[in-house]
Length: 220
Image (cartoon, rainbow, N blue to C red; front, side, top):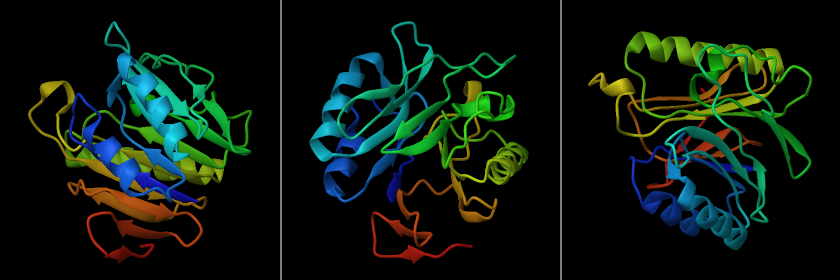
């Protein structure tokens, strides 16, 4: 499977997503951050998923500006759409969806720290973690990526996360764009910190292609 992992700027017309999904028609799945689009954009995303036969995993804000999960399959059908879990938890369900026969989990942003009750009854092969804005400190980046590593190991699942390239948490004034991938043993395939380039992950070879150049990054 080829998965495109984007770290777009916060935008209102889906510019980067539309550009990348059209430019790389051989990808199987596109992962974008939490809150990337609005409720009024969901039908556009469904059309794009069907047009390019590509699964889209991201998050959107509803009419009340509340964050929600979103998985759309390659036929343009919505597989997962639920509200974001409040900070107190427990994790809202459903937090899993089957994509082309493959079981996937979904943890929206800080849900990564709410425990795995929403996943524990299902064996998942891939877990997605769309994140809103970048990390507000080096310490948060270390904690976040460490939690992702632990979950990937506990669940024996590929774990993928990505944030926007801009914007700070609660306007704290500091932001580290973040993206990462851990394999089913908890080993890092890549860890991206303050590097908002889009990557395409080949899940079979564990190699990374940067979409704006020919460079290939091997598993670290």
